[in-house]
Each structure stands twice: as C-alpha cells, then as structure tokens.
Image (tube, rainbow, N blue to C red; front, side, top):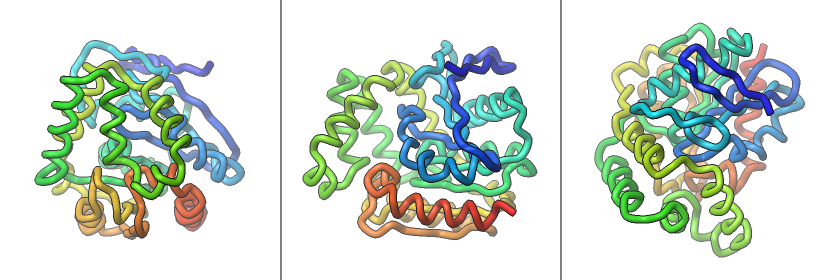
Length: 266
C-alpha cells in the first residue's frame, strides 16, 4: 500500500491512478478516498488522479493534535511535495472544498484549476447550527447510530427510497473508514472555524463551484456566496441534488466536472 511520510511526520495513505495532468481529489468530513471511486473511473483516462485519506480517516494515522482546515491543507501540500508534484488541478467536496480553498490561497501558482463542491466560505447561520447539532449527536452516540442520522443531511429522500441497499452499503463503508469520535469532533470544529470569505477574491485559478439544490448539509446560498467571492468562478446547481451528488448521480456530476477539467488542461 502506498504511504508517504511528510515533513510534519504524518504518514498519509494515497493512490495515483490514471494518466495525464495531475488531479488532486480531496474528500470531506469523516469520508475516505473511496468516495471518489466513481469520479476516478471517469477521469483516469484523461488525468492522473491523486486520492488520499485526510489525517485520522481511513488508512491515514491520527496524531494527537488539534485540527484546522489550514493544517489539513498543509498536509495535502506536503504530500504533493513528497511525491514530486508542483502543478495540478484540485477538486474538493465539503470539508475537502475548504481544504482546497486554503491550499489554493497558500500556493496559488500551483493550481491549474479548482473545483469546490458542497462548499462554504464561512459557517454562519444554518450551517453553523447544523455543525453544532452534529457535534452534539456525536458526543451522545456511537459512530453507526450517528451516521444513521447524519446521512439524512447528505442523501436525498428519493435516493434513499430507490436505493436502500446502496444506502446500507454507504453507511457501512463510512463507519468502517471513519475517524474516532474525538477526531471526527475535531473535523466538525474545523468546519465551524473555517472562514475564507474575505480572502477568496485572491483566488485567480479557473474555479467551478457546484451544489445540489436539495443539499441540506450546505444549502445553495453558501455555494453562491463562494462563487460570488471568486472573480474567476463559474456556478452550477444540480437540480434536486444532495450534498453527495457525486455518489447519487455520478454520470451528470462526472460529465460537468470532466468538461470543466478538459477545458482548462491546455
């Protein structure tokens, strides 16, 4: 299994799949790299996909220290330095989109194009209350019980009704790869602390912002705020889509995101 021990001492699990320009895929809160599987399958003939597990998630270790979005962005940059990449496309979902924002702000010249899915620039109002509710649930429950409830924010009712076996498998996969309760709590605290709103104007990479119109985790108003703040952005809303639109409807998600990637790969 491929691991990289980066300059901070963290041992990160990663995979490189496909051929072409590098594409870094950053996953969200408590989710491992396998949540990108449908995208990797679609992208790998045109791009070299770099997928990995954030600290404490999946096969990457969980050191005893406080988490922040900026720290996780530094982890990602250290991994990319370690494997010898200096220019790449970046795509992040949920917490991964916040990490992608920070990464781009830290090293703007390295990012050929940027994708932010289910994203936010600041956790105020609804999103702040939702994160705090998730923290409260996590403090009171075991991981499996927590995700039985948490998935209600991530997947649409239609998908749950039509694909009950897929939902069961998804919960099992998430629970298996999830961080400890303590580290997951720290990731949610990092979600709340994230605030790039007044710095996003400094992003100059071509940027695609997407959100599902039925995203109950980070509703469209948060994605629109990010898109409005980035001068080079394009905004796309998936009708009836959830927070995990890439899992529910990978064909449309892949078509739109791959089209964007190819248009900025010259």
